[in-house]
Image (cartoon, rainbow, N blue to C red; front, side, top):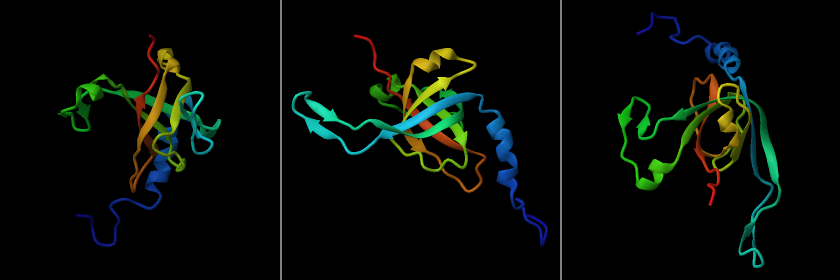
Amino acid sequence: MPLPNTRLIPDGWAGHHRPTAQGQMVDQCVITRPGGPGVWSDTQGRTVYPEAVTVYSGPCRVQQIPRGRRGGEELLTVSPTQALLHHYLIAIPADVTWVRINDELVLTVCVADPSLLTRTLRVADVLAGSLIWQRDLTCVDITPTGT
């Protein structure tokens, strides 16, 4: 318990730490979403979306989330389909608040692992909190596989 008349977490604490978190973002990414609602195309036999709109382009940090493990390393039960998916935690600057679930993310620079440049990721969750140093996105690899 803090002493009387003291705050456990001082004002500006998260903002003070944000430059350190952003300094670790040595990669670059682009996040897009469809420019409007999809329209069914009889000729293509699928929904066609307007050209994508860029909602964020800038620094990020990426790490793969090991399959079947989350947070405190407790083993989670996953379906066979989920077990095949690769999940990533993407960190972007904390002030980027307009990214949404289902936006698509492509890495344009990945210093440590250039193989990630070939992947298309879909935002599965945008994590929020009261004291954040960065905006964390949970993403799933939706890169088309070869036939």
